Amino acid sequence: MTDYLLVALALLGVLILGGLGLVVPRLRRRAEPPLPQTEVDTRAEEDLAGPPVEAAESDLSTGVLVEPPVATAPPLEVPEPTAGRLVRLRSRLARSQNAFGKGLLGLLARDHLDEDAWEEIEDSLITADVGIDATRDIVDRLRERTRVLGTRSAGELRDLLAAELVNALDPGLDRSLRTTGRDGVPAVLLVVGVNGAGKTTTCGKIARVLVADGRSVTLGAADTFRAAAADQLETWGGRVGAETVRGAEGADPASVAFDAVRRGIDAGTDTVLIDTAGRLQNKIGLMDELGKVKRVVEKHGPIDETLLILDATTGQNGLEQARVFTEVVNVTGVVLTKLDGTAKGGIVIAVQRKLGIPVKLVGLGEGADDLAPFDPAQFVDALLGTEPLARDA
Image (cartoon, rainbow, N blue to C red; front, side, top):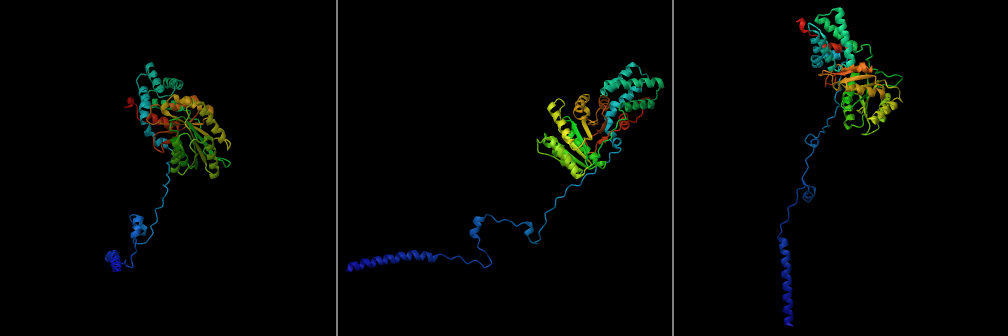
């Protein structure tokens, strides 16, 4: 009995000692101090929320909300007046003058105009792309007038040459642009031409010419095959406040042209200018499509002008381009680009001689306002210059 009692007391002692071993370490842990009342316990949240985020400027210090800057449209450009542009741009023809005008005047200034001299004059005109038939007519008339009139002074020779060149340009042709609508329908100008002639850029410059002359303009981006064409045209139009109607890339050009005219009617604009895709004259399918554009646009009313963009540097090849286009869309006027710095100024004469189509605008530089209404007398005067011939010195 005593043995059992001793065993029970031993077990009780072990239990008491074990319990004390568990309780004492807990009592030795130091409790963390309570947080001040003004703070918030975010320690558990920091691990989840990540690093702190700085406040925006509008939330700092002053408490005043700063309004974001308002985007303003760039101011519209004011194109320079077209009256007298060709005179102001005559310096752009300096290189043409040296190669073409001065060369002819130098030949005419010789003391003796023999057959060799007249052949050289013919060669100069042909090299300038005047064309063989036109060159023969000009030279024959010059020879006859110098013989009959006995003209020998430098000033008289220059005046005779100028008169013959102006006559070859047929100054009686109507070079005005029909840009005023009628019966609530704006005037429609269709712009056509081959690839690489600078057609879309020139179309934008024509819009500036119209705005400079007081016309309101709607542009139609019917060149849907070249991705950048519509963007390029829209940029040109935006500078002078002209709206551009465009479609999706690859859209039907005739549909875009039709919508442009309808938009022009709704907006009450004076002129709708339609840019078409550049086309090579041997692409029959594309030329047929250009005819379709014309037919669809004419559902609103007749097309007032069809302007053919020609590159002056293409020379006589430009005549074949012009001929094919006239068969499709009845070209009413030519815009001759890249005429500055070229000795090929005679292409103006050749175009009119072969086609009977007036050159209405000429491009004399890369500037936005370097497109000028064409005036035969001013053009010839710029080509020949005003310097006296060598024999007058």
